[in-house]
Length: 306
Length: 271
Ligand code: SF4
Ligand code: SF4
Image 1 (spheres, rainbow over the protein chains, first blue to last red):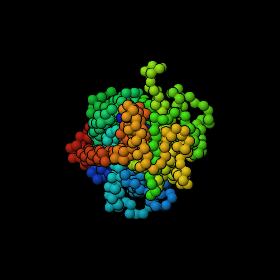
Image 2 (image 1 turned 60 degrees about the horizontal axis):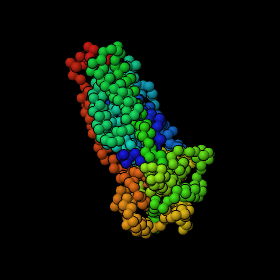
Image 3 (image 1 turned 30 degrees about the vertical axis):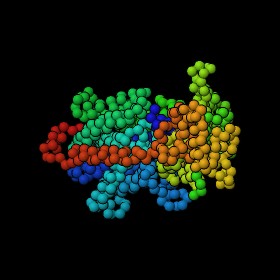
Image 4 (image 1 turned 90 degrees about the vertical axis):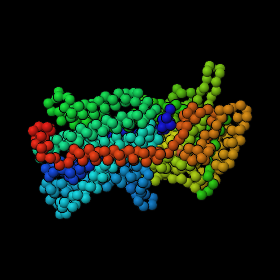
């Protein structure tokens, strides 16, 4: 029995699952927007702006989800300020501490990017004029993009830096969550952009192409994750394994990938269908990863597994 | 720092009376579960089942019987190990968990915000939430009693001295003597768990004498620190980020005119 099985589950359930999902989409949307901004054409701007809006809303919702999950929510600021000394609270070796600061900074940059985008579209008229200058936009895009990558990946690292089954048994979780954040973010942007007449065919095509290759990488990462789990993979000899194989890998990665490659031609609106499946798969990935581990605990002197 | 203090628990003389559990609950004013309704686990004499935010001592009962007449009981009073390198301290993002002047580990309830990272970080499954305070709680090694020169409530109450309290160095000497005594009497399975300062997590300031493998008692054989995974997982994510960056570079870049024309002919999804 792996040593990680002799521990207690932290009860990180639905609020955290939702946070991992939404935070991933927020981080992923920002870095996709950054890449499109830096590498794309001016006609990609609508998608770039959309990415910033999604990132900002996602960051706000993420913060709220994390606060609601605390058993003493009004003490959320203890993550940032030492409550009994008033000094800054930061532990570089503790992902939850780094992540608290990371999310705060990400929210700030996503807010600036969203403000700049809203000014550009003339949705708002307030705010300093410099937010629409190209120098400002570029700095925000680069710093926010880096923070986006961080937000998308640190959640997996946070799970690994514990002593819990599955989470602490593979070094792949951070990478897997980051890649899944990219695929779910691209899927979100595809779905939202199609509803906005401003996004053009070429931008959408790029997103679909990005999502397709991300799914290929995700498939590789998930296989590597399962292999590196070793003996801890026994947790998946349960309903969670079925959900992982059928829901996450089958319906959430392989099927949309097959659609993207044109191997499946059944449905008329394939891009929408594929994006929907990717989102569902990404959500289920977090459900399976968290809840399968949550079910392992000690009772008396025995380890109980799902 | 004052002298390092701790517990040596000799499980071979535990009689399963649970006086330690009661003394701990009583001194620390910990509430009963389920409003005090009796709950039967069906697992030997163990109705406590696990350590929790309101149960800081837990007597485990292990029945090793081939037949009703041939076998033995193992009993062990479990508690926070007050690790010399503590996983809970490592992961706590608020600084609520501190190391005291007695080299013990204490959670400050007024600082904890209930994030539960420490529960996942402890290699022994010791910590859990106290639903009354809304904070993570566990044994404090009676920090309040030690401060005024009293020994912890559990070791004070233990009628067989299965739980012994004292300076770690002295406890280690006593444990070594007892180990040699048992081995010379033929109990070859006897072993110390957590007494070695060069062992896992720098040794435990609450260590044990066991007469079977640690797993039999529900203890990990090689407890580890959560931070062991920090570097590998960070490298993994960084590689993931680089790969995603590369995928973005290839797929999201400016298209050549012919590719744009191709996309517009229907090679890409409709807008
Ligand atoms: S046993 Fe767990 S709770 Fe106790 S000090 Fe060690 S890591 Fe912390
Ligand atoms: S639950 Fe409390 S003691 Fe535990 S890690 Fe969070 S803040 Fe620290």
